[in-house]
Length: 234
Image 1 (tube, rainbow, N blue to C red):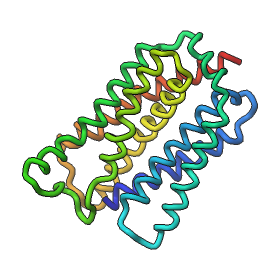
Image 2 (image 1 turned 30 degrees about the vertical axis):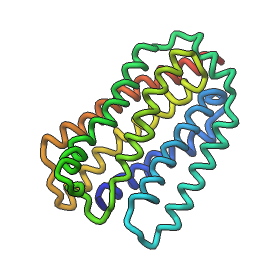
Image 3 (image 1 turned 180 degrees about the horizontal axis):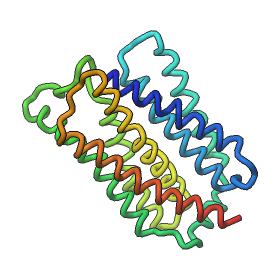
């Protein structure tokens, strides 16, 4: 687990933090809907990241830092969402958005985040034992976050988009940004694991890492389409 955390930390430090600062202090040409959507989405990434640390990492001297980061991320996301111009966001539905592409992404994301962890969970349930790689943890927090929150949110977002609700656009943007960031994290996590001497079977790399990287590439393209549509609103 430790190499995975280190790989994630590196990407958050090198990509997420600079990107958040860049969007926060971006010129007015990147203002309006784009800035609000991307900032809210980045706060969601930090909330997901900090939840994994505060709830999943072994207790250590940085525990209060994890809790503080989780608290700040949660509050920042709440304030950001409350300040969104929902009417302006709703106008995105009048643009030529690729709804089919978005729906395909949401279906794939919802299914992937639920099915990806089942090969770990089902055998443990069938044997009546614990997870094979549980180490010092009582459960795997990522399973809870992905299957309990992110996956179902992707499915709910489909119906919100179909109902042309502004919240559907916001949920979509947050999922696209999170998925894109995870696609950058996965290779870094694997590199840190290899460096630490952790043996990762090829099937695991193909079913988990490569799958998420490909999904992240698709999400990045859709995010570009969404940002372009928002920019065209003026």
